[in-house]
Length: 423
Figure 1 (cartoon, rainbow, N blue to C red):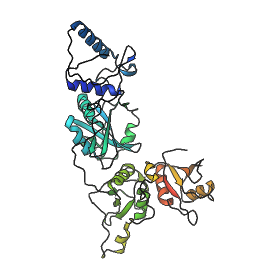
Figure 2: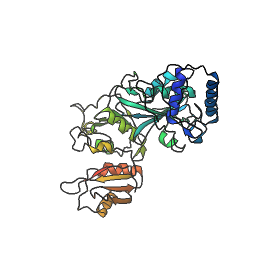
Figure 3: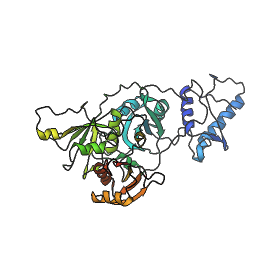
Figure 4: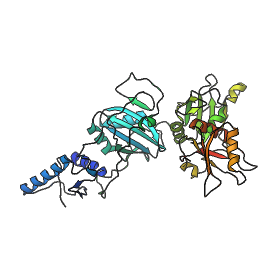
């Protein structure tokens, strides 16, 4: 056992935060570190003190305290790019909110946001690694808003971000001249390799210490809780409000849909709450519907207004109230549907299948509706469920719209959703 006094409390915090994700070793022996109750060290043995400091310094510079022999000393190998995951996402978290929070710790150059594994994530680049270290040490584990939107922060293996577009998903604050274009940030970074993930604390947290900071609000005013989405670039082939309701209902209970009378390529979709609106936006923005890449973003409208009494028949047909729909997937508290929300995929999950319906019956149902069945299998333990793989994600979205709630017999209706599995 030994004690080590750093030059400042900030230096001690920086070292502790670094070694939570990189447990140190000296001469192949693991070293366990925690805060001491001593405020300072007193010693008269200057020779031993100098020898101990020289040993520690040598180990750090030689990489002897790095994990796995990677040669990373304190602060070495860390990036100015942070990977951020927002858990317990109750309020929508925007690129602007992240910039507001993290800019308190240094100059934020670039941000890219995306959804992966059904989680809102972001990559954020500081101008300096020290600023990234300070932000991670201060913000990891804290809540953006009271009781929700918890930040999980790690260093990325990327040394810099390449932002091509300035829009609601990505921003280069050093380049105001960048265009706003279609961008799939998750795809852009799927080719860059894995991210550096911390493994958490390897020692018991000392009560009251900075190792395990309390989760407090970050003094950000909660946004207006709007649950209305603006869907744009719709194909004229969209068959009225019901089609948009079906495609969006996988992520929440749709209350109202209005296709704009004078701009029929745009529509407003009102969800039950802001969380469902955020889920639908995250998963459907950039997907193809009838050949068009649709854009989904939060609308400034708090609600979707129903047509007034004097509205024409066509305008009335473009708006529909679904608040009393029997097809709502999330109306029951604790429904298992909350645990089965996935991004659009070519593989569909089919459920509520009756015993009289065979594999060929289901294949024929989808094929006769114009869809290409690539693979099919029943669940081994529950024949009421099956997986069906179609030719593309776009085709799977249209199949869900067409065949969800399709009547199989007098009392049973087919349930269709997206699956995370493949066949």
